[in-house]
Image 1 (cartoon, one colour):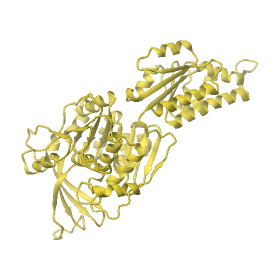
Image 2 (cartoon, rainbow, N blue to C red; image 1 turned 90 degrees about the vertical axis):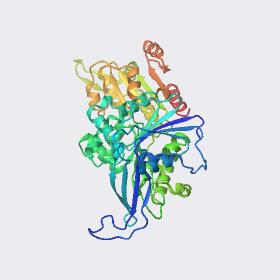
Image 3 (cartoon, one colour; image 1 turned 45 degrees about the vertical axis):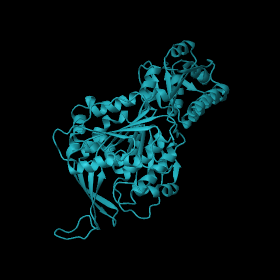
Image 4 (tube, rainbow, N blue to C red; image 1 turned 90 degrees about the horizontal axis):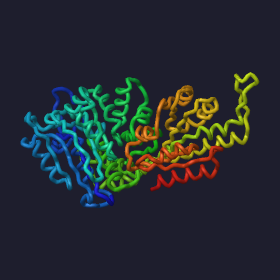
Length: 519
């Protein structure tokens, strides 16, 4: 269990689901099909998520110690469907519901759900009603540890309209940005959209999203809608989102990490009979986030629990979880580590290197001008080549641990260019502070290159949470070290000899990174 209080803020959609079980999702016109009793129950991504998140599962805890939940949504509290939602929400522990003013007197959103046990599919007929009017004012993060969760975005017509007309002042964007910039984690579950062009609006929210949770179909649609190409969604989200969790139905799920690609994959749980897959994605999101954020399990175990939760949701009618099944299903989910750079600690560790003189010393014995002093030739010298290999191997090991590596240079000489071509492929970013080696960027698989950058630029550009980051600056220049030591927020520094790094220097940096990742 979490040892410190957690405040969860949720903005989500609500509907009443009218579920009809039928063997054929498209019965012939004019036919009469005998069916089981029609079921009416609370639904919608927001209420499904909260139902699963507050449920008693696995740890057999009847309540949510140290957790408070605020839920913001829209429905008509005075119509019959609204009363169903009110009654259900009142049973959820530690949940305070804020229902936005419905001055239009629109009906509570409701949805006819056709489910088929034959095809394991379902079809929706949706009236959004009051959900069309949901557009909450910007919400500031509470002072306590907190997480912000936005779910059912594609059902929030007014929110989408403001993202379309004025994204920079959109209340939902300002809420995400406020939480993210104040060191809080955020998650987004967009849901399916009947209007595919709406998917491109999500691009405004991705910079402030810690965890994007969606189905594989949604992932493909969002990537193609934003890029206007058929770019593989794994490549797209690797470049644009901190963590993307993709559910793939019977094929399980995977987690994509920024700059690392797929880091974890899981099988699907062993579900013998699918009754109704409605709400399985919401169940997955709730199981994953509850395990990871509240119970502080690692990401691998949280992925396993999320899959078990999604599987359990498929084993009964309606968007609720067969709780008695979760414990047995979690044992049937296999999770595989897919990346050597997997780091689920939530800690960002930056290693920033600025050692032009070191590189010059390392390579200088390999560099000889011809007699006319115009054409350069390179002779391999074992000692210096060994030193360069040591540095490359150090960067690879740091990268493998999950560190984020940046390399600075203010030297445009041939020697430095030659060194940087060897080092930059192991770095997340290479920056120059004067013009002179644009070809390095071209040979560096398109990594970002800036004409003027400071260590604060690097940290600010790449890090979202100052409270969970560690930075070390390695330089061979005493003046630069002194300047960096003045930075507020605690940046570790290491001065290395201009003759170059030795084994002891390298081991010290690797040990430091390991300590930071494990604290």
